[in-house]
Image (cartoon, rainbow, N blue to C red):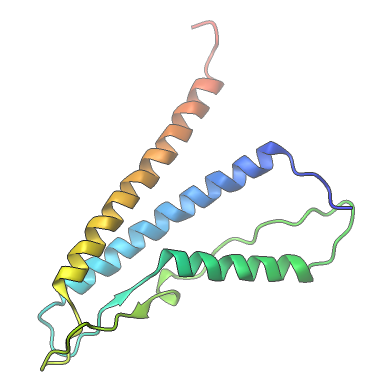
Length: 144
């Protein structure tokens, strides 16, 4: 029989996920900025990262590691830290239209992806900020 997880374990994993999502969004922003900066570089191939595909791949890897891990009553499965580089998840972008100089940066697509990622990055920051404020309020002196 599998041991029950405490709600604090789940909340801790949720916080860890939010922090990793924030880091991922920041690194994707840098990748998109690199694409925009190299829009006029001959032969440059644009790269991007799909958050959904990366998350799906990591969840499958996590399920596999949990399925193959030895189980016992005293050892609860733990999440393995994501230590790989964001560039491992990056894939070349297939351009909608080819250029004579071999550059695959589509500025309309890059601007759109950059704007969308900026919004999601700000959402991740706000989510962690809310968590921090709740923690700060819960740990403060109740007599104040």
